[in-house]
Amino acid sequence: MTARLFDEIASGLSEAAAFVRNEADPATYRVHLPDEVDVGAVRRGLGLTQATFAAKFGFSIAAVRDWEQRRRRPDRSARLLLKLVEREPEAVARVLAAE
Image 1 (cartoon, helix red, strand yellow):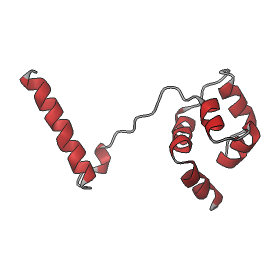
Image 2: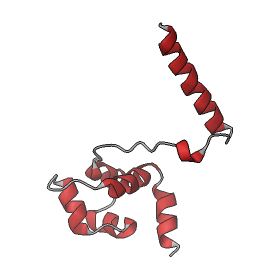
Image 3: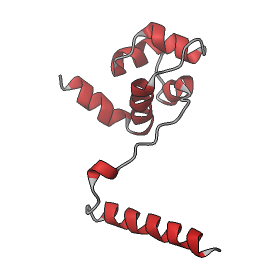
């Protein structure tokens, strides 16, 4: 391992430790969004129909249908919401139902 590579790894570990201790600067956080989201897999994983999935999470049924049939690709904001739905569907449903 080169010294440069070691320094990069050590720096990353220091940043991760600061994040865990709530000492990191939020302005430096980076959001990593997937380029693709398998909308059908997310929906099926929740056991929902296209109509129910769309209604529950604020999507149009046409958008869900187009995403699943690969006619359209979710934009950045939709991919973010879809990733949240995939990982924390109950939390997203609670937040959206609170309105």
